[in-house]
Image (cartoon, rainbow, N blue to C red; front, side):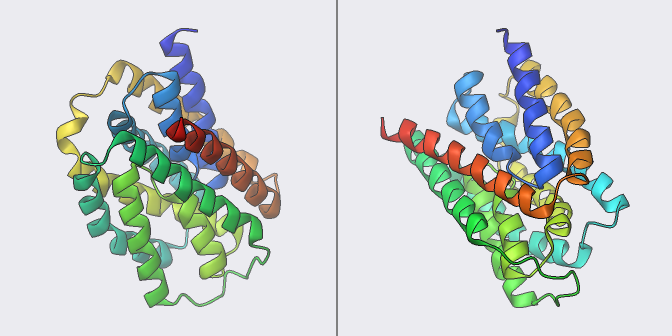
Length: 248
């Protein structure tokens, strides 16, 4: 299969995940870029940030029109994560590739297990606790910077289980967090962006944007609990694969 077709296919799947689940796209983007398209771990994490930033911003606009973005909570998360995301991005290039892959797998697996254990879906009127939101946002920003992920696969569990947000609102709000965190991490990785293969990254991002629109429509037809379980199972599968690869 040609590189272009692989990039388009992977991009469509990742966009679908971002649009429907509010996260998980970068968890899928990094292994796709490494194992299917031959990127190094550092280049893959940088390219993933580019792809996820533009795709998340597009998907967020659709969710915002439906009133599914809680701006106050999302901006609080994002603001708290900007500094850690930039610091993590500056340090990422110094981490060995094997350690980066293993850390990625462990974080994704932990987030998936938490999602599977979360059963309650609180009402959207649950008050936001600024301290907890800021602490969670800072942690998400650090993970974004180091691992090159948007943080949605952690933001969604945090918004649902820590802040009591309903799944559909968590999906829309997490896209705001992902967009801001990804752009902050990219600012710290500016020197590595020029070396990316844009003939691959461009079509990948374009397909992801189109997939995100379909994912958003899917989110309106599937229950929040089902979305949450799908989200968690995909994360577990990806985490297991990457952990096995890192140990090999």
